[in-house]
Length: 370
Image (cartoon, rainbow, N blue to C red; front, top):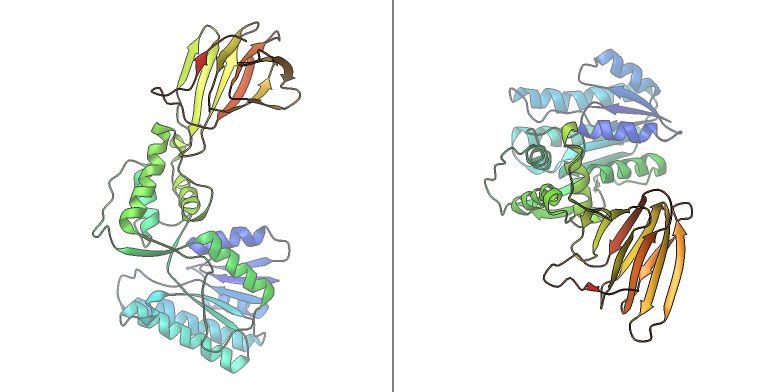
């Protein structure tokens, strides 16, 4: 299926093009700002579907709104009609299409041009009045507060908020692309005046957005990660790190050497404990303590280990062996003294997860021998 994308070099266009190239059934015909009417006519003659993303929202003069939004859309519709293929069209409009300003009026007129094309040809037209779209490759200091905040905060630059309580409705570019691909594949029925939307929208405020992105930056110092596994926080975090300059792709973390080896703090969570790693020199034992409530999971990734356990009440003992050659999680049990000994000839490397962040005031770690 050949997909004509206008505005292919723009923010949404870049993300959509990459995703479509990952799918074998799609072939992209890309039109960019420099493409002329002749290229548009050739593209329209072979397109099986169109995603119309091109437009103007920051012109040097108001008359560019009409040229870049209305005239371009009318030219596209004419090219498609003359080609006789009647392909479906997905149109990225704007919430401002209801506003009485030059940009809003131009977007509304572009919608009407596409509705006329649909009425005349019978081709389905899917119009999306998108709110603020954010994600990777969006241009900062242009038309996305998310892009601007991510870019500036990642570089230690100031951000400006005129109204921290101002409401924001956001959609993530990956969700937009998912929706467009769904329509390209399924061709759902659409009514004449129907407006479509991206199923997942997020609502926040400018101040909350700034605080969340600042927290992403602060997590490198505190090691306490935000809850980045789902929802808006996940999408914002993916966006934030995409604006990190290459010289900030990495950051140092604390390490604590002693004669036994090195203990390295990796990451902490707000409510699910922390991750660390440590080394153990040959013949050396670490641990030799017990916990009342704290639990841990150990994974030897290099070397050979002997784990020893002793029940505090019964003095029952238990020994088990593991190595980096056979990945196996070893759990520590409240009320059991435990230790780990490097029984190999080389340095041993171990990953560890504890179900709570270490609290020096309440460490729940009591020295004892197995």
